[in-house]
Length: 333
Ligand SMILES: NC(=O)c1ccc[n+]([C@@H]2O[C@H](COP(=O)([O-])OP(=O)(O)OC[C@H]3O[C@@H](n4cnc5c(N)ncnc54)[C@H](O)[C@@H]3O)[C@@H](O)[C@H]2O)c1
Ligand SMILES: O=P(O)(O)OC[C@H](O)CO
Image (tube, rainbow, N blue to C red; front, side, top):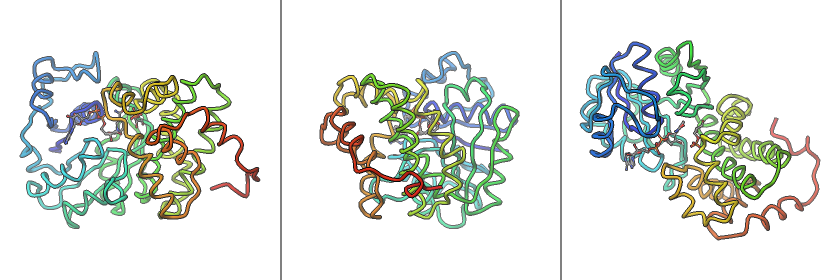
């Protein structure tokens, strides 16, 4: 099958390699000429050190590579998803399936990324979200990984399942696109907080509490927005939360570590040198929680630290000394 991957960061590149290995004809599009030049000359992506780009992988900065493709994978940072879909739309064949692999919430609309893509490409193109615990560094090396392919169009979700599935990449199908995408975007906020706790010198107990209570508030908002609670217990939910909060591959966690050690948030984001989606998603989470009347104390605390310079130590004390509660009454399960 002819497939284009639009976005040659670490994730787009790792997925392009997987699709090539699965026997497809794959072209990887770069946003920047300089980025494409480096890929062509070195046959390596600096984000995936030691992983060779085989000669069979097409590399281009010409977006007309999407012409004639049955599947187009959009792998840009979330802020560029709508503009990229807008550019791609007039070049698509009838019935081309779009796959969104970015993790975020659109700032301007507070909508999901597949909703933004759908609005740009039109109803005739099915849109699928592919998400789950999947660091590019590991997928690039062929580490066994499992993810979810979600769409309202089950045929499209299952097509994407078939196309990406391999002995090292297991794909489950789902019809809960909203749940999968909100889980993906919001876990980045909790991963930033987990990193912050690590940077402050807190322990494993603190992180376990943060992840558990973080998942509670992610699911609370996700269900209020129309997601299914089961999704939050799955790969896109707890699965991705675990991998992002515990791995040193995670840009969100590493950014949080810097903040926990005292680096100002904006500087920490710059130091990471790759997209830190949780920084932006924290603002979305705060706006959505307020709009929907959903209690999200950890996301609200993250917002105060990231955007209003509040001291993480003070915020942690405030979270620990909130009014007492019953756990089961407050559960999302
Ligand atoms: N890296 C991972 O392990 C991983 C895994 C799953 C999902 N994701 C998600 O995939 C998305 C991309 O992440 P990444 O790690 O590949 O990013 P990255 O930080 O490695 O690279 C960012 C890419 O975006 C491109 N870009 C910058 N501005 C652009 C614009 N205006 N329009 C189009 N492209 C632009 C850059 O040229 C670069 O190729 C993010 O939403 C991320 O959350 C990443
Ligand atoms: O590096 P991060 O923190 O953006 O996380 C990457 C992936 O989302 C992990 O599944």
